[in-house]
Image (cartoon, rainbow, N blue to C red):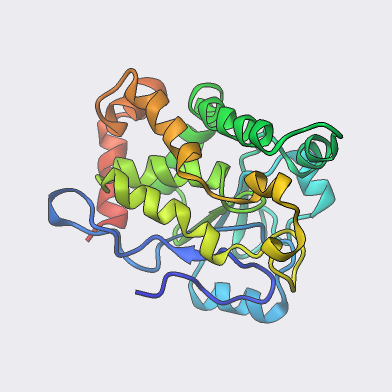
Length: 247
């Protein structure tokens, strides 16, 4: 199936529907989307979102990132904004890190990989809020950060893992960013404009997503156990999500 939604102002906007979940069920199409940031959407793009019936925009970018690239949505708009700021390597930090004279490609890759461990350990409340919003908030929902890769990739890991989507499929979906994300400058592919040294910042790599998986799996057999114990989401809430987004 075609996952990517063609927009002029965003390049990594895609449907998580159709993936096989637990007990032969599937994620319903047209209910849960992931994307890179939506600050550059055109009027036509916003109409596409309305046609898709999007009711909630969940934005994981930090307050600083929102100042740099303001959201086009707010709590009173339609669709409405749900801001769950996750402060990690934002655009500013990445620029500073990548412009350090002696920084190596490997150091940048390691810095990013470390962040996936931080998502697991330091942002439990934020990701709990995200999952509860899928359960109790209005859907269809699109969740995004800056590139729709790291913070968004981990949110997707949790949601898909919770629904019983297999690990290799979650990784496969994560890596689709490399196919669709065109980078921070609209109109040209990041691959053509960034140096090899800073490519680790823009690529989705199996090592990154596996860092999060390994951190969870070091203590828990299943994503569900991690979500129940560490994110304080009980089984009833998980069932609400399943009833809402599975078919």
